[in-house]
Amino acid sequence: MVVGLREFAHRTGNGSGTPVLDESNGEELMRVQPSVAVALGNGSLESPGTLYITSRKLIWLSDVDMAKGYAVDFLSISLHAVSRDPEAYSSPCIYTQIEVEDDEDEEDESDTQSTGALDLSKIREMRLVPSDSTHLDTLFDVFCECAELNPEPIEQEEEEEGEHNWVFSADQMVVGGGAEEDGEWPISQSPTSVIGLSIGDEGGLAQPMLELQINDQRFDDAEEMVHESETKDH
Image (cartoon, rainbow, N blue to C red; front, side):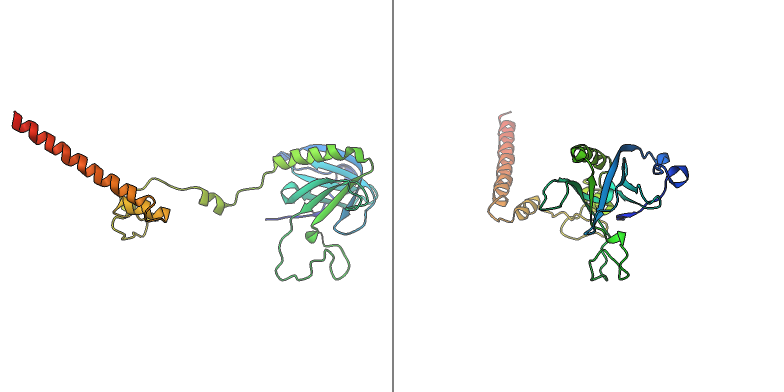
């Protein structure tokens, strides 16, 4: 489930301190960067605040409004990069793309509601602008480290597709093309036809296998002739 960007106002010290972390589940504070402004979507820069990077998520808390803050999990961040191109954005920043839930019934892709209020669940981009741009590379490195701590979970269907049971019981092996209910891998009576059809070329592999089968029969006939000859000699 994609969580996306959300409001965050859980602070220590009666709501005026640092963010409250989920320490019981191993969340750790990785870096604190003061004097960072934030721009959500196509909006303008908000008043500077403090950026907290934890082992699970990004948290930005306003230094002006103690009740204002945003958070986004690293699992919801699909891209992060350092942007220094003035044509892309007016200030050097950390640019991030955020995954959001797809809303098939919503034709308007705007990140604002009809009332003009910002809908955080639709924010797809966020820019973090430190007052000192020399910290950008360090912040990027911390982003990379935390992203590695939060790999994308493997979907159950993909996991099942990647696992194959190559051990078959006698009941699962179908001879002669009659498929059993529990046999997902019907096996033809002729191994030669199975290999030949899998290639898709009638003369590619089926013919050599057929010749090998004939040669094996000739070897068996030759051995029987030698055995009969030795018996007569004795």
